Image (tube, rainbow, N blue to C red; front, top):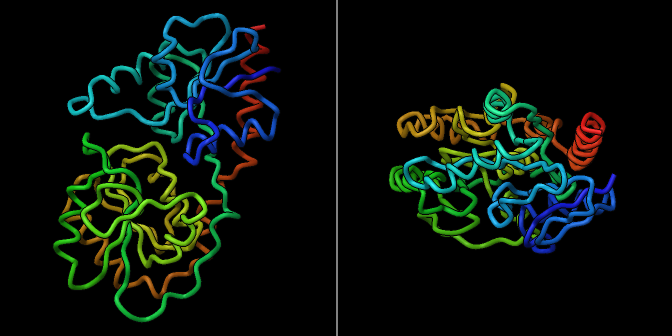
Length: 292
C-alpha cells in the first residue's frame, strides 16, 4: 500500500508535521506539498491542504479533520471543513463527537488515538511550596476560539493568588514560544494547566499536561475533554462559562498538592504514537480493500 501525505511543512517543528513524520518513519510512506497521482491513497494532513488541490480526484483520499472554526468569526474555514469532509473518501477525527457528526453527514468517519509522545513528557515531581503557577498553551487566534478573553479575566481575578505563564502567542500573561524540545520544561513548571478554548480537536496540550501529571481545568463539550475519565485532578466547566471556569480553577488551586499524578498520566493511556500509526494503517488498508 503506497500512501502519500500532503503536509506543506512536514519537516518542521510543528504539531501536524510530527504527526506526519510518525507515519512516514513507521511505514515508509511519502510526504510533501503536493498529492501524488501514483499513490494508492492521498492523505490531507490536515484537511486545509485540500484547498490548493480542490479538483484532485486521481486517487482515493482521506482527510484529517482537526477541528472546525466558529461559523461567524471564521466562515471560510468553517465552510471548508465541511467541503473537505464531503469530498473525501474517509474522514479522520480527533474526538468522538466530531466523528459522529461527520459520519452522520457524509459516511465513513473514524477516530484514532492521538499520537501522544509520553516518553517526551516525564511525570512531574511534587510541587514545591510558594505561589502556584497556572499555564495556558497555544496561539490565541483572532477568531477567539482559544478563549483568550476568558484567560484575561482569570489573570485579573486570580493575580493575587497565583502566577500565570503561557506557551505560544498572544496570551494575557507572561508568554514565550517553546520549541518541541522545551515543552516538557514548560509543563514541569506548572501547578495547574487551564484550557479556555471554545473549539478544539484534541487539544494536545491537555494530554501533554496530563502525561506530565499536571492537574487540568478543561471545558466540557470541547474536543476530547468529555472522553477523559473522572479522575481527581481533572476539573471541568461549561465551555465559555466564566463563572464555572473560575470555580473550577479555584478548586484546582485548593487541591493541586494532593493530586495523585500517576493517575493523571494514566488518563492518557489510550493515546500513543504506536496506536496512531497502527490505527491509520489498518483503516487505510480496509478502505482500499473495500474499494478494490
